[in-house]
Length: 416
Ligand SMILES: [Zn+2]
View 1 (tube, rainbow, N blue to C red):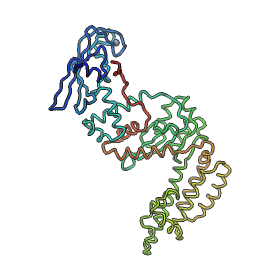
View 2 (cartoon, protein in one colour; view 1 turned 90 degrees about the horizontal axis):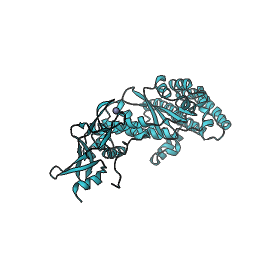
View 3 (cartoon, rainbow, N blue to C red; view 1 turned 45 degrees about the horizontal axis):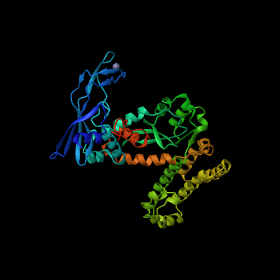
View 4 (spheres, helix red, strand yellow; view 1 turned 120 degrees about the vertical axis):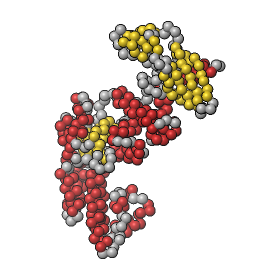
């Protein structure tokens, strides 16, 4: 088999294109391949698909392709141009790459696959690309995916905020709880931020929303009430966020108590911060003894913790009536605890109680958002290369958007 024929097969080049020449540079570990087309081929205008003859050829262009073993491989060609009566002189589409791309579609797919497994810097190193080239693939993939995204009803959504950078820069994430994908990312955490999501939906999509899980955060509440039909019955203040509020209350109790104890030379609470944030089942084995000892001691922090953990049971009831009963007992206990942060947290939840109890209608949990959250945390950690908030958003869409990221497979049939 001749080398040109071999590369025609390997690269999946099809008629009217063929491989005219293959150059091997052993020193540079590089293969260069030139594609040419049959004379007399007719092309489509890229704007209107009208069949036209070749007008002339553009300058030679080069696309990086998948390596041939350890040799970097480049495809060269002069794209034909047509002269369309309507659109003027236009370069035609080549089957192996998207317009303006510097990589063949097959290579771009590989870059996307590697990016899914590692960060931009890692992918750049593995594939011998620059940071900008690698980043460009990710950005194009996301743009392509967002453009191709089908309109559909997302019935159960979770809304969450995330610190995007040091200081107070936030982004708002809207996730599809059932699909476990991020549907929307908006700057900040204001009413307008969430409005941006709802405004992007059709009336049918808005009407299709069945439940919205979120924190007790007025801007999100207001936006949902404004946009979602019967939003009042659909908002669910979810367990994750409520327990987060309770966790903060426990931590405030601990801080104050620790300060007081320390002043008396009592170091019992030193380094105990994280112990109190776990639920009992999740407490790591090596801390169990110390924790049990602390809990047995008559500490305010221990009481606050017990109140927090008792609230957690609210969501385990099968019936609303039982949950309501649990709530009343719990609320009495919490508000009579004489632990100010706990009393405050309990009152906050109480003010929002009707939409805590909507849980028992919708059974919406944000286990998925929590999973996505930790994924996003990982993206953030990997993100030393993400120079700004826009890049962070792009990376979230790339990893969590459930998007169709690949360029269309326009070439390569194994039949040749
Ligand atoms: Zn045209």
